[in-house]
Image (cartoon, rainbow, N blue to C red):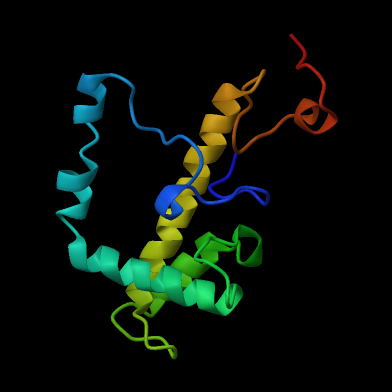
Length: 143
């Protein structure tokens, strides 16, 4: 389940049409303060990351509504380091390398969480980094 699967259409206001990992209970949700613990801490940084999203959409999906075309650039780890090495400077397109690094870090984290969630919801949970032969063969693991 990806953020925007190939056949998925954005929901109301462009929102993803899938559940988030927000906790279901009131106490758990209080431990995930998205507004006061993220948005209020980093408003300018998040605006810069949003600018990266817009510029990336214009580059990879010209004329299309804003969406993450995941298959067009998948080298998050290498891109994070490349932008880190150029931190404090502006890229040739006028966007901060640090903002691009932050976008890539968020993309990497999002994919890790999705993969973990998918594995937890699958019939058999497999390790993320060390898949067994059975993962590829589609058979039940040996006991």
